[in-house]
Length: 135
Image 1 (cartoon, helix red, strand yellow):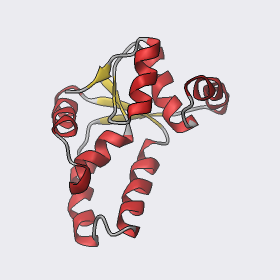
Image 2 (image 1 turned 45 degrees about the vertical axis):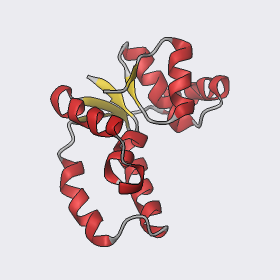
Image 3 (image 1 turned 90 degrees about the vertical axis):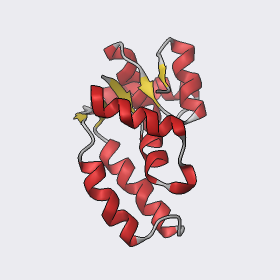
């Protein structure tokens, strides 16, 4: 099991972001299962909505993606307000959004790797000793 960041899922969904790394990570995710913080489903949905608004994906593609995304074995973990407020320090330390810092803290606390194609988040992982899952 590993933490899965939205960036990997969006790269897997969108043709213009497709990568062998994203495909391999999702393949591994299907075998091992993943975990993500509570905001993950909304972040995925927002990224897809933004892609649609920018003409990067159309309505029919979104309809095809919905069942594929629903099958992803990702456990969504609640985030309490006290935890979220604590993540601010991680975000400041690594110059990340609170959303991205939450992935990092979850991986660090659980002692598991984090799958991301976001360079800044990957660098932050390496700086604290969290394994970056690339496949």
